[in-house]
Image (cartoon, rainbow over all chains, first blue to last red; front, top):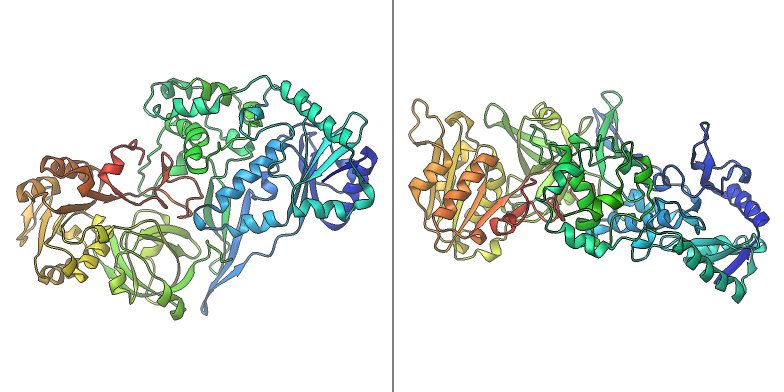
Length: 341
Length: 275
């Protein structure tokens, strides 16, 4: 079902959502960087920015998450589980980021094991995405089977800006329908002409993304290329900072550690980790299967465009291009994977 | 849904010093009903929680056929294993699992089993060894070739005589360097394997030990005429979740925690040596 909402009513909607839930949307931080932040009012929403510096991934898959508290005393050990997550809205993320959540959903439910920390939080999260009219030069979402500036994968509601200033609002899930029915006064029914305009929007926006990679061909190149001399040199500029993995909407690797406060209290914590770090695979005793940058660099690209495809039939990448922008030495994922030989 | 990261609370029931840096532990769940339904297969592993320190991966040292306790043999090598060595009887730990695949014994009925282990590698083979001894009727001859740096470094010395008493079971012990009173072989495991010269006919070789031993044992077995399908080993990698999610124990698209840790050499030889 498609609806219309005016530009003015978008702000009214935001304030209405804010009144009942936590809303995370692009907003400027103290240093003028646009990030997903918790809105205090609709005026803080920075709707003009295309890509926030980092993704909204950390609102569902927390950068550091307490699994449980542990109390160890003379009566034994007690495990106190974390409190239930709050309902939140992620407002104004882009289709590439929403599709990133769809990829993470599968990973965290893989192999018949449900990661309840992620899954419970995702169940309480409503994702409202906005179609992209002006993709950046680093964008390459259309290289992916589902990728598009108007793709709705992972979104509960997709807003597409129309020429008259209003938005076409489409719902794809019960959560999305609920969001609109709870605020039905702000929405009008869309006409056929509006949905047709979205088709034009799609054509126009997709045409602006000039770089299109044949990912099936990339996978074929990668399969026999593990021992290729290509990896000996392509990694050389890499400074192992891990920024690429930090800004990625799909990088999910994590560490589990324990933080002890005293002899009685400790907490078990899951935190984001990065395959670019030497310690990532180093075992107790010092043996490390991925000792040098070449091996870790190869792992990152092989994982995203070869191994993950074997396991999940889709790449571990949405083409958002953030890693290209974040890399201090201008390593471009598109060039790395197209150059495999 | 149940929390996949939450461990069962267990007590340390017994500790035995095996060597200078290896101790064997017996654990039992506080919740006895949970212990009853907790089952595993030889080759699988668990994640031990040392509360206040963290988690670490260990193999089940005992088989399901001897399941009064959950047993682990732990070499003091890192943060969690050092903390494990500080444990005392009665202390509380956490256990989650079991994880990973297992030795496919059902495919080996009627075959000879040749176990080859080095050092603490026997900890990973004790469970399959005892499982096959407890089900001896299903197998033909069982040979256990075990070596360590010195006689002092052998684990499970107290179990050898029980193992040898099982019909058609043969134990061959070796030490890289002998010592006074040592009546067994002296020399590296691969050299002793060559000398013993087991026939590959109707035999499965199950090997575990340090990487250098594995490498030369593999060579000897292939020279003896074993096919890659007849050679089975178990791998270790750094792991955090044990569930195929934390992303660090992969070799290509396989995760050692969920697709392994048990692999045949036929499977391994096509994988890059990134383990």
